[in-house]
Length: 402
Image (cartoon, rainbow, N blue to C red; front, side, top):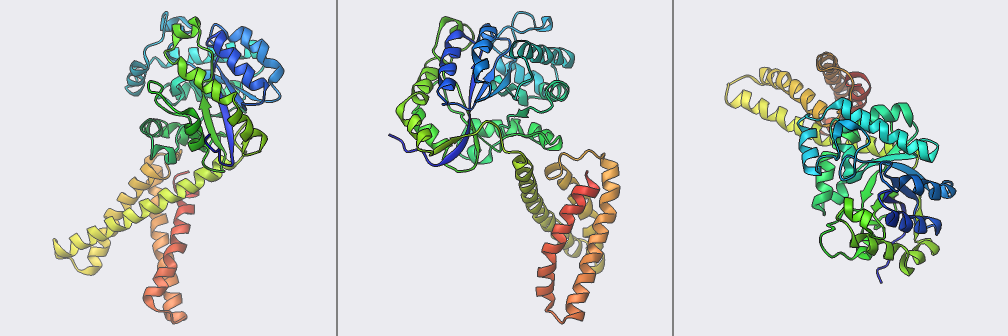
């Protein structure tokens, strides 16, 4: 038996509504307190009946919309009888070849189908096969969410820790980065950590996978697909036996013991404000790394000025500042302050005086510590660098790129 580490988890069962067999398995687990969230396909043939059976559990679990653009028949006419394959959808979305109006109409239709049978907006929103992270779809989703479900939290698929060990998680992290930036900019509550990806085509030890996913005390969202495979499910999806194995584990003694002994604590939604602190910390780390690259680049330009162009140290510094300022602006905008709403020209015109002001702050502090307090020149500058770096982060965040 695999030992489960003490952890807090949002355990979300996906694909409710796709078939009666999947519904029965998820309902059984939810009734026995084995899950904390259920994600529903409002275009699924079993959604209407499933919603009725799920309503008595509304106070115990979060119920969300599982936005779907693959496998199942669409609700709107523009898509024909079926959606494109996942590969085709990904290519068309990234090439911006999807009809934005048709996408928005389908998103609205799925929202309305959800609310018609559930009676209220979803508690959260995610996507079947993670389609909610794709270009065109994500923009339409954010627009409709703001109108119909502004309090709903959303699923973030970017988890750098998981991406280090799992190729599928790495791909999701790359594809989901832009949606994460948009959620941060819009202050939309979302999960920090995301687990649940594995290869359904190969035999897997789900108990061992779950133990690995929960090997941290921080709240983590784990998505799963428990179900009883039936003909209706086989018509739309080729993930069959893994669903039964997931159900067997979640209904079994090991998971039950973990819950009863409080080794695992189920959480319905991400803690309010946690996503903002996590995003700020990650942005600060990117700022420090990018700032280090900018410093090395500026020094490289300085060396080129002295060695290649025979400039005096004074003019080499000027040369490095002129080029380095533009390079720093470009890298900060591309890798750190990606959610800034200000245009390139306006941001750049604010960045230059801010950069100059920080230079003079550095010089004034250096003069005060060296000439005024008698500090060693190297020690003084070493102490000033963190102060100027902190000031630079704050000024860029609230004045330059906001």
